[in-house]
Image 1 (cartoon, rainbow, N blue to C red):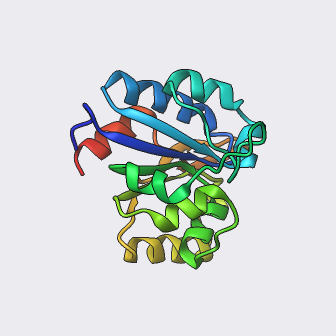
Image 2: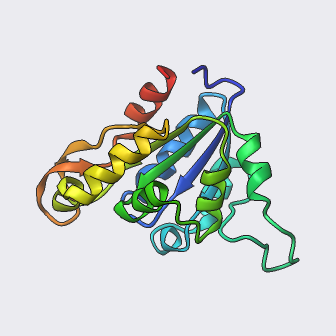
Length: 179
């Protein structure tokens, strides 16, 4: 996929790996993509929406309606706008929601409305990543046609070392350029 002129929707979920999503937005914009960001409420505990809106040059969407003026953040229009929807970091919780059709926030509503390719970059602790439920959920979402950007091996936030780290932003960009 050529990033120049492409429309990338980035879903950001509540994980310590959110800091990598900040760099991902910067690099996507630098590569010529137009980026819009949807954050879960949990993601805002790690990084302020202002960071993403500044780097993407677009408002960040967190809920269905804008609290200030009551306007609706139309998840269907967002889904139709995107050439690619990347969920990074994709927590075990979000992957389970994708696998089971749980639609409890604007990001999940957008995911379920997406007609473009969807890529997920898992980010979780080693035991969570290797848990049979997570493996099954990843397999299930792949069967729906979703793309998994493999988690990387390394030091995790818990102090453990193993698989589960969200792929580095440069690796995510290389991966999506090869889609």
